[in-house]
Length: 310
Image (cartoon, rainbow, N blue to C red; front, side, top):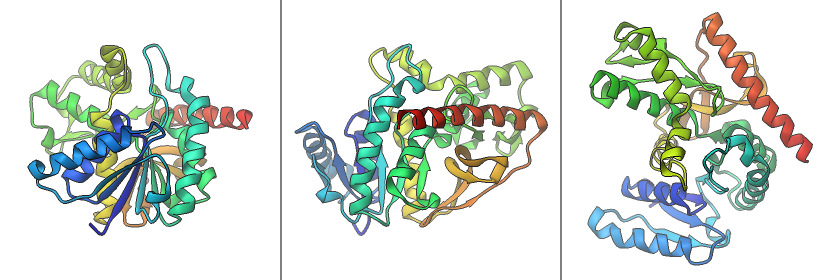
């Protein structure tokens, strides 16, 4: 393979990202984790599945960063997961330290890489990675909107009993309880869902989307979601690796767009070989603007909290 992606963190999300990258034949994969034997074991297991899954991607598991040099993309999933009753914000102190250290390691060895951040609390960790890497804003992107939109799409499909392939949805804002699903931009075969279901059902799906991660945490009891988050990160990576220029909702560093300054917020972006190649500004209603501002305020609070931690 002529492309190389490093995945930092060999837990459920990271290992599933590695699996999806390899099985889609997108790149060679380096899986990094501090726990000895875990990235090596998972990489070997995935390599032994390759003859059956019919791909020739090379998977390497390591505990240090030398092998990551020259990566095209680095997907950072490292950090402690959410536990029941825990908000994403509770994670901030521990995960900020982890993401900062990891980002410095990968940025020095892959100075041209694009960083995709998955660690929670997502928006805050994007700020940590941007500061620690010194990369331009185009090359530090947060995975949130693709996941949240996929959840919304899944719920729309369940509600209307239609193919998920016909559903499209947009979720803006921070990755948390203040996210902003946009029903009027959410469609089934091009038909807005506002034409297809009653307002109370739309409201219920919006609320379920906002609590999508917490719903899975409550069911699993000892972990958090990983199949859908991994798929979301890989969709972003594929658009970059293949220069597909897909329009996807991602956490991007805004400098004036949507009236926000120096803040990572989930917005529609064009993802290509250079990372964020364009930020798409859509016209929002007053109500949607208010909801997005509320979400931005929540992200700003996390950013301010990071400053107090030094």
